[in-house]
Image (tube, rainbow, N blue to C red):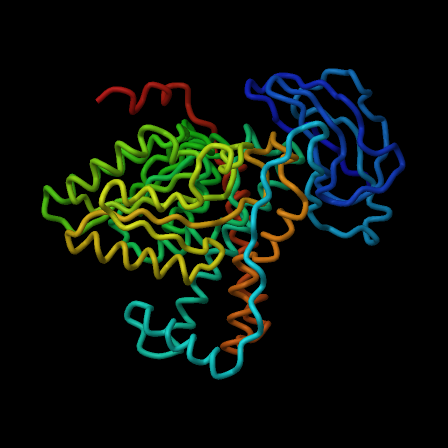
Length: 452
């Protein structure tokens, strides 16, 4: 059977792209996720990856030709699919481009004795809110695991659909950063507010937003969480306290500060959380927002998801500090560095910050050291990152780490893990089906919610 290779939407304007070269020859075998061809968009030269394994067959769109998004440019035959590993292969660094400074990755810890491991488990138990016994603790870990799996399955499923040209627009994905979203949101109440970025899917799912409404919004449908008007970068679900995501770097920081100030003025014990990346810490809104929140003792939590790259720029090239959390001292608030690949560590830091905020003691800056496995957006092949760096971070995958902890420390049956993963996949597929079957917005709705 032959499967069409569809040109995805890659350019900023959604216009035609130019085929530069095919990375493999016709009749060659390619693995899912491997580079298939190189194209030139109105933004840059990028790679298009294979959405499945197979043998490349024609007719192929020739190099130099202009192709519209959604057009069929070739086919992948699955006559050899069984022999092809389905795995993402990180792209090689761009030739002639200056490499980013090496990023140190913590070495793998030495095996722990049974006594030390048991002691650490008891410490974790004591840190979990309302936990009376190990069973309750494991249940919370299972909830965190299920949510992280749901986020990962959702992002990966949309990635595959995008490669087939079935997702409108582009995607900014968060694979690898799931522990930050889940760890922070697990420490919040439903009436607490979160403000997300241009990479909002994980935050909204972790806060409890409707997966169907999120998906319909990405497809631009009337049933989307903002009526099809926002797309992937402007998601919201007010019912669960997920405010409108902001695609402008750092822009949600002062907005979250304002919400937190309103809670304090009203005598409420609610908190507001601002998620942002390492690049936003060099934006004026970061410094203004943190300073104002500190001066006003606003119940705000500032969560920096430091994935090392502001788009394609390594943080080491833009600052002379190692830890962004060190900047908290300038504003008189706590600054905490946490392993963003460990959901328990993130939760512990967030719970402490939330308790401090609810008690009227002001804001906290949390820097979660994490990593995004995909490029900045789906038009970014990520060639500025070294293979070794990519592999080292994937070896610390937050979902796999929690899975091993559940199986190793608490003897969770493998069947339970399989059940959680199967349910997540079913939810994702149902949400996509809902979005694809949902109606388009009516033209009259374009003027709704514009004026008060």
